Image 1 (tube, rainbow, N blue to C red):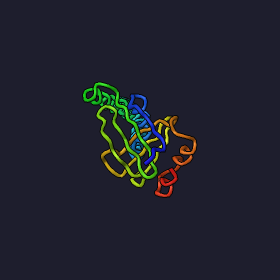
Image 2 (cartoon, rainbow, N blue to C red; image 1 turned 60 degrees about the horizontal axis):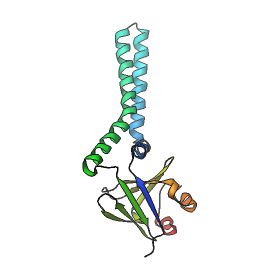
Image 3 (cartoon, rainbow, N blue to C red; image 1 turned 60 degrees about the vertical axis):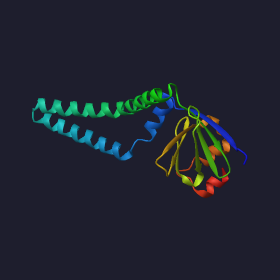
Image 4 (cartoon, helix red, strand yellow; image 1 turned 135 degrees about the vertical axis):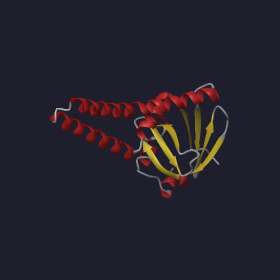
Length: 171
């Protein structure tokens, strides 16, 4: 079977951070906003009752929540990069070969191969410079692919909220 095209991607800090920020749980973000709003309202109420100590505590808690929300993606990415460095002693690189009805992912460090049928794709997420492909399997739930390596026709195909067997046949 003939390869339609090939894509190479490195799991660099920039790519992993972009993936982490884009795939964050929307529910978690909403809950954090609610917590911050409640903390702010409680702080304002405490100020109106001249309880400056409690108001300051509420504001500090809000600041900690905001700080954690900002720092957590960086912490997760740094842990991942450290693990990759310990295992592979280099930045992880992958090559994806696209065929008519499936794709094959190759880990450049281990030469390990994973075959994935297009019907296993449940979502294609577009970021500034990547396509994130979510699979049904938990083994490789998210794979990242630089957008600059795709041809323009695939850019149109991947601009959907999900991918269906009809779309995958057109790839």
